Length: 336
Ligand code: CP
Image (cartoon, rainbow, N blue to C red; front, side, top):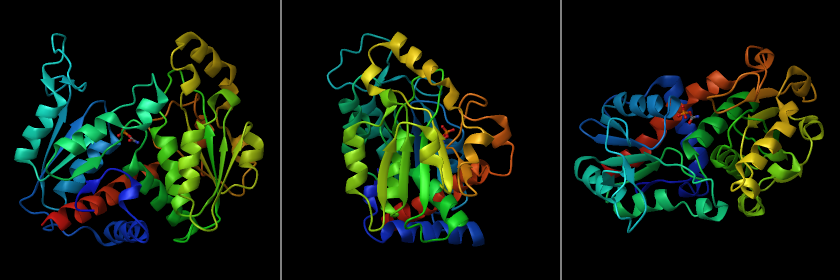
């Protein structure tokens, strides 16, 4: 992992389980406070964050590293990401220059980029994350990109291990589409599916037909299925939730409708009743509720679930810290 952590693919074979075991040890016994003493971490954000920023800053600081957080167009210059752009608009600095500068100062760069939400194939190719990885001469960590959020996936897996045991093989989990006033990226659903596949879980995806995950993503997830794992897609919530142990709700946009905002909004409104409620959860087998947060209450999930005994979302968010500590320990520990 010394070259960084762009996706779960950077953790082949047993490395994923070993990283999760390290995160569990750190959570139980605390981090080594001097492990990263004298090291420097730069966090670069293209959009807002609560959990990722807090967990990465604390993960660096609690292990002895110094950290600086910068937001494009916030505390820092607005960054241009297109190669060859004539920068006569409102972007004052190019991403390439920012990365080269930060790599002069820091031992690790972590970046949160964004999905264009105009062309699924372009997002799938991860152009901005790829640019950062190419230009940086220090390891890069993905703090969410167009189609991935591996730090979130680790926290999701740690939460499910705490709930169902270390071996998640064959455990049924349901990822359900949820309504939202905005068309959101596929990064979190994609990373949840990839993580669950790597652990050999019995994965069900529920989504209205217009919002079914693209075949390219499903093929990618199937290619990662560990022995014992499976993937099924449903166009209704109830059959996908029946007998499941965890309901993971997430809103995402339809790549088919990226270029037609009015039709996109109308499609989301047609399925407004997909809000996860107690009645939804009751179809599961003692099912727990998961979500990456932030969440729109009473749109994605009803208060009765989020404030009830089935929710695991705050523990899941808390696990962002121990998993981020484990990632920095592995990446920067390896650099040292
Ligand atoms: N889940 C997650 O990444 O939260 P933030 O957007 O607040 O970082």
